[in-house]
Image: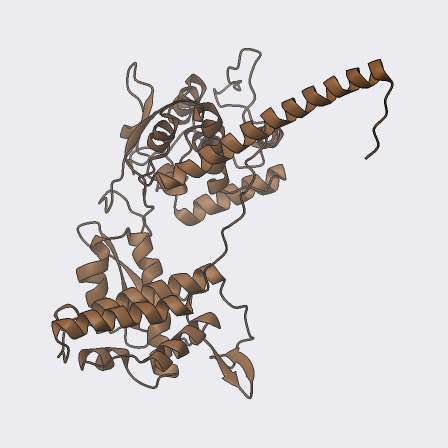
Amino acid sequence: MDTRFRSDPTLYTVIHLKLDSGERLSCLVESETWIPARVATRWAVRYRRYRVQSSTLVNNLRALCQVYNWAETVGNFNLDDFLTTGGLLDARQIESLAFYLRTGGQKVVAGIIVPADSDQQPEGFPSPSTFDYQLAVAEDFLNWALDSANRGGRSNLTLEQLYAQRARLSEIFRSLRIGAAESRRKAPLTKDEIRIIREAIAPETDDHGGFLTDSKGCLLFSSSRFSKETQLRNWLMFETALELGLRRGELLKLRLDSLPRGNNDGVRILRLPDDKADSRLNEPSVKTAERVIPASRRLLMAFRAYLTAPQPQRRISGKSPYLFVTSEGEPVSLDTANDIIQSISRLSGVSLSWHSLRHTWAETMAELLSDRPNGLDQLKYLGGWTNSQSPSRYIQNAIAKQATAALRKYQEEIYNLGEQQDESTETAVLF
């Protein structure tokens, strides 16, 4: 049961189901009875599930949970009954919904904002981006529900009136959005920071870069504080994400058949949604395009060590086709992956996340590809982006860095020239 974004534990919640087909399908239900919210279920099952990944659908339903809670606690009506009888939210009701979302599902009593559950202490408001996201989900749902062919029940709208109501909703919601400011560019990891991380978690190597082993054939980790069962896996997950620029979901979706065979050195990034072999209830999602990324010789050596080293370092085989598994042989979950990267950050003292590794990779690759005629296309392919705007910002950052370096060089040259002239004329210039 999902309790996030809930203001009252007796109203609605999100539960997660795994169908026999392997599909993860979340559902919005009444908390006490687990009876599904009728219109929300139709929206999720008949419409939304075919357009987004399962993880996105979960987030959509969490936001929609707030809409249902608002209808019960503030609007004093059942949203399913209201919509199926042809009810339409007016501007005042939508503004009330927006205020409810903006205050995180809290109520106003005597001019003071307090939680809907009186036993709780007031919490911080959602961020502007979270608020805008919740508004967008509410707008999409209400627009979809205007058509009785979608949500069921009766309809009092002609086709012209339907279009007019959708335009009205769009205008009202547009006026209520905050418009979150563009996030500041986060600096990629420096070479020194990467070195510090490796000193904290990487295995020992000889002068030629080969891995040092003990008498049993296990890799030696002099400074790693991870257990012997997890130290090789955790380090390999870090190196794979950093070298290949993988998202967290892509990293966790790597399978044994994703690894290179024979003379091929490419790691295959496959989408594999709703895989029956994936035992995780909260399935990681590959939201980028499928592609093949070449791996370095050193990374291939690390893969080989992970698959062939003696126990307890070797990957537990026979239970899952996924590459990164727990000491029980089950695929690493999203929560466990988060724990791993937080532990690496704590052990090294370097602020770190899985996305910061992808960001570092993208910044570095953009610098290498920015001066090539098709550099943007190459970066787009390697990163798996489907929208050209995503990799273009990294190219722009690289161009800005190059332009700054060129300007610095120009400034040094003109001031060097100025110093030579000053020496010859013995003229001083005051600013």
